[in-house]
Length: 197
Image 1 (cartoon, one colour):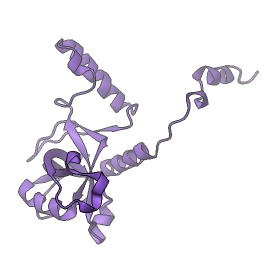
Image 2 (cartoon, helix red, strand yellow; image 1 turned 180 degrees about the vertical axis):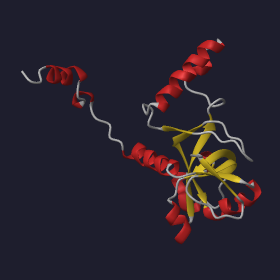
Image 3 (cartoon, one colour; image 1 turned 90 degrees about the horizontal axis):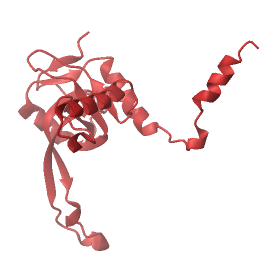
Image 4 (tube, helix red, strand yellow; image 1 turned 45 degrees about the vertical axis):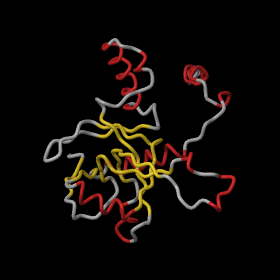
């Protein structure tokens, strides 16, 4: 099964749409005087670009367009950077560190990341790492205008977009238990070993 559909710019925005170098507008926090917030009239905006994937449910976008699009960032598996990689100059060591991180993502051990597949066609795409801790809201109108500038885009095919949505929800719904509440493997192993005694 193909991971993606190739979508024409004229088609409406939907869940799982990928946009490259999308403009992200943020307020410069140093331009806000919180001691007198009512007096703030002008804010300095920062404009950055980011590769994003649309997370809103497809039905919400199709039947009742929202004011804001929820999106998360993604990066190419070969160019993203992980903590610790910059500390070593040795290429083999950096490859090992990268593989350790990617293997944890692949096995679901790093819940803030999700791996999506590659694509070959009018748009070529390597494996990508979606970062659920990199969340943006983008005005619907801005993204509608940007889709025309962006041109042909990819949309995650079903069931991959539903899995992405599920993982996104699970990341924010996870519960951090105190260490003393974790079930110990050794205790489980004792119970299983004593089975049938």
